[in-house]
Image (tube, rainbow, N blue to C red):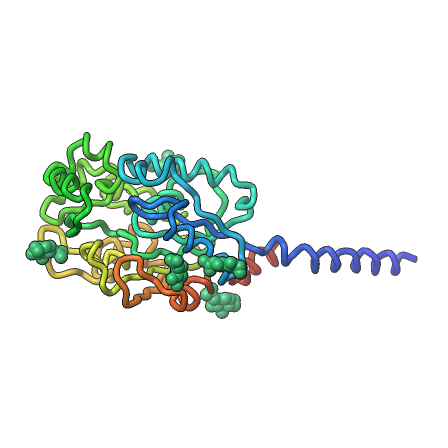
Length: 305
Ligand SMILES: *[C@@H]1O[C@H](CO)[C@@H](O)[C@H](O)[C@H]1NC(C)=O
Ligand SMILES: *[C@@H]1O[C@H](CO)[C@@H](O)[C@H](O)[C@H]1NC(C)=O
Ligand SMILES: *[C@@H]1O[C@H](CO)[C@@H](O)[C@H](O)[C@H]1NC(C)=O
Ligand SMILES: *[C@@H]1O[C@H](CO)[C@@H](O)[C@H](O)[C@H]1NC(C)=O
Ligand SMILES: *[C@@H]1O[C@H](CO)[C@@H](O)[C@H](O)[C@H]1NC(C)=O
């Protein structure tokens, strides 16, 4: 009698296990678009749909404010805080999720990972052309807003610019490091760059990623230098040479855990031939989709429970 009861309990448990696991392990992803993008524009919605189609996993683009205009005018700390608020309110993400971010969207994604309290865990984070270590100049471009950005550039560390131009949050002029550290309102905090203000919580959170996939675009002329996609950057005080990520202090002194993650084999430094955020379906399949599908990244946690 007791034995059959035990067997029955075992059977029920196994059945629940078998049927519930595939559902609960279907980790969803979210997409953060770049500067002047919007979840509803063709390029971003095509990327989100392609990733859903190719991976077979659920995912959506998370919009910050009204899209294009706010990506330009809203300071990044506010964009990140809106992302934090939204993610906490999405029940489908409550067990954890993966992120794919484009360009400036990586500043939002990393703000979310590092600054957001009481948020669900991020497992894999795939960064497409992210200005992780900063950008040094306004890129050559013809759109009307470019002339505005160029005109504002000499004043980039002015509070008014910092508070009203999203991209100013990740401008790091190598010859203006003192001003940058004193007046930039976003990147120095995100990268734990200020000696007196390093926050170990930001580092712990970033280090908890299962995989960090950093994709650089070989013909990128928007991010200067393009190596910023891998956390490479100019040395303080000069516009050359570009230091590879392993030679930067952020890495050697492990300000945010990049070295810890790398030593653990969790960082993939990848590059593709295209221009800024020009990625083909084949490249998505090869470099992005595996990190959206791999539920095994979760299994050790579940077994431990
Ligand atoms: C995704 O799959 C649907 C259905 O097969 C198809 O209609 C759509 O064109 C695909 N979209 C993309 C962006 O691949
Ligand atoms: C931008 O254009 C100017 C003039 O054509 C050129 O001298 C400069 O090298 C370009 N900068 C970049 C980063 O491509
Ligand atoms: C570090 O960041 C966490 C999370 O935002 C915050 O709770 C904590 O007060 C910060 N610590 C310091 C020393 O600023
Ligand atoms: C949609 O995205 C895929 C993968 O990036 C790309 O191959 C395809 O050309 C895109 N289609 C459109 C209409 O942009
Ligand atoms: C997927 O999981 C397997 C088994 O744990 C692991 O060997 C592999 O590296 C993972 N791949 C990715 C892309 O996370």
